[in-house]
Length: 181
Ligand SMILES: CC(C)(COP(=O)(O)OP(=O)(O)OC[C@H]1O[C@@H](n2cnc3c(N)ncnc32)[C@H](O)[C@@H]1OP(=O)(O)O)[C@@H](O)C(=O)NCCC(=O)NCCS
Image (tube, rainbow, N blue to C red; front, top):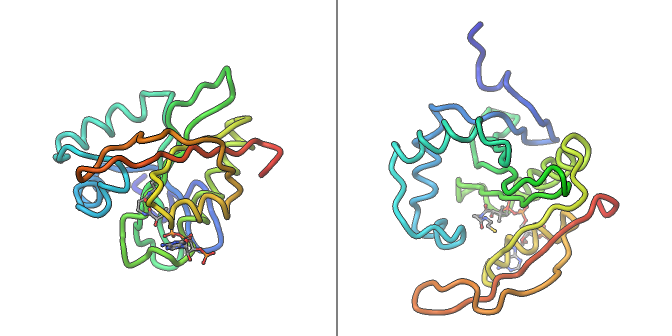
């Protein structure tokens, strides 16, 4: 049976929901990843084509070390970003979290923090993670604030870990444990 995207809601929050990624979503994701402002925040250097994106999606659902979603608004099903887990080690019960609100006019409205919290609850409660971690560039103050609001703690610094626009930047390492959520 053919279903609308809204009916594929998988994790449901107050104002947003997370659903599986479909091939029709790829042009928008490609636009976000190639955006000059976003790709610096994400550490992307090379251009991404639609065929790269198709290959990524084909591999995604076969690769058990990753779980990825579209972030959409409950009000109108507008797709505003993506997020999920990568480097999942089920035996060690840990993973890295990734989030991108690609629609820049939706930044700063609390959607990123809500998406992070939905992912954390799914990670700890359904995927049985004990620890969820991430790295964020030191100049990405909005992201650092959103991670802290969701409960992440700073646990270290990769000094000069990111080189961008002829400058070195520190990478802030953050994590949250299951009992802290
Ligand atoms: C990072 C991101 C997920 C955050 O989501 P968001 O919906 O924009 O953020 P929220 O509205 O939930 O929270 C942002 C917080 O940062 C604060 N903030 C914004 N700009 C800031 C700045 N320059 N300095 C300090 N705090 C700042 C906001 O005031 C808000 O905190 P508050 O609720 O206490 O007022 C989103 O902006 C995004 O995807 N950006 C582009 C890609 C990216 O950076 N991904 C993360 C890579 S590690």
